[in-house]
Length: 608
Image 1 (tube, rainbow, N blue to C red):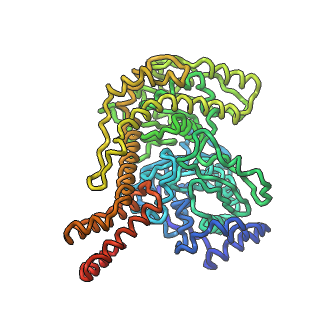
Image 2: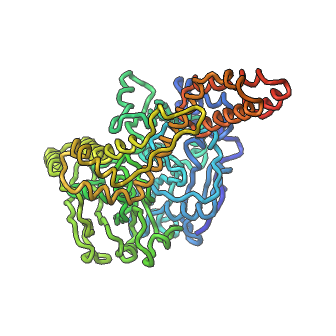
Image 3: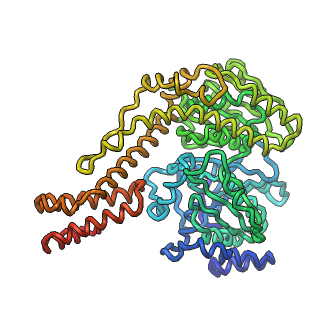
């Protein structure tokens, strides 16, 4: 395996924009020149250029880089192209990309294959656009924030080619991004990868130039994203959206003649297609994911493994899956030893694998899903059975869910009948997915609402917030106290499903998902207390206060107020803009009332 820089056949010296125009002319597609300059709607949205965004900042908001991975007979899998050329990847990251961008040899993926992988960013990496784009993240749903990982979106082509020694042309075009927008990036690859394989690097550079002109991925905004003559219309979700709804449909009533592709979602996968072989056990799988149990998906190809792992992670939405998950995992992965050791219990992680070697290496894991080929839409595979782990043999095992897990909840026969009826009536997979997603959403909400209600009760009363004291602390989460609330306000109020809900909660409270969820909620509530404290300060007559206190105390107050402003900005506290402005006015008035020498010192702090 080797790692190389930009290939010799890479972009010419004419410059990126010249190449973009040349590529468009070669295709006879003047629309790409419009794309490079932006559509009329983009003129309104592309305000970033006026805010001092540098070359490639627009690109970096969406992608870290684009890689081309090929197969060299002498060197093995090799990164042939990294674009833009200044993109930084560590050797470890390049190695992971190399191995994860190709299916295992046994997969036999002829033709074109798309899949996704996820790997840890190297420690110490500095996010160049952190300060510039960080404020967009605050409105993202928590399950779309994944700052410590890279996602790789792969378009792999393997076709017979007698002119090559190996007899096959094998190459992957890979988009590397921090954004978990699976459906969106797979759609982008479908648009550009086939032509890239025909036209090579100049076409790739032209496509990257188009991405660099995209507006930033601001949550809640409908974006028009032109790429190589095609315009995609998307909307990034926000944390304020009602769960289970898509906003894009309501925004497409008027005719958009220049829109080529409208995406109803940026991140969701075809849930029913992935759960189809196991939908009889979907509720049990929901429990396993909710509880962060170690889970392996053994599939025939990276497409099946990555889609199934992503569907599993997605099934507890809007709750975030806080443990690690790898849509496609290989024996070359840098975490291979960590995740396959037998010296300790399997970690809380979901792995998608295709190499038969894992059937032996991971046979000690408590929950294993073996699936066959996922059928095209409209074709229903045979339902797999739950089997005991001792029946899992190495290579000849049939598809099935291999586990000794006993679900806490009784199986919901209603949803099974509904999905089976849809199968008999040949209901489209999209419609089946809507039914299944709504079912999972209602199940997750029934489970999480009692927790939300109890955690809200830990918040101090607003009347206990004094401007002259530190904000009060949240009350402690007491598991037994929470359990007592379930008798009157438990999931039985919103769910028809019977079973041992108490046992499920007890198990959940020990899981990484609870730990991650509660830390997030505690941070949000602490920030809310800080914001209320700021508002209480603003309501005080601070100038009057200073008249009754010494200059030293007044200076101390000014410095503390300035730090409060910095904290509100740095931590994105949920403070109203007029509150911030009022506080600045208070600070200015207090400083002007001080002697000139003190005014000069306080103004030099540079915080006003």
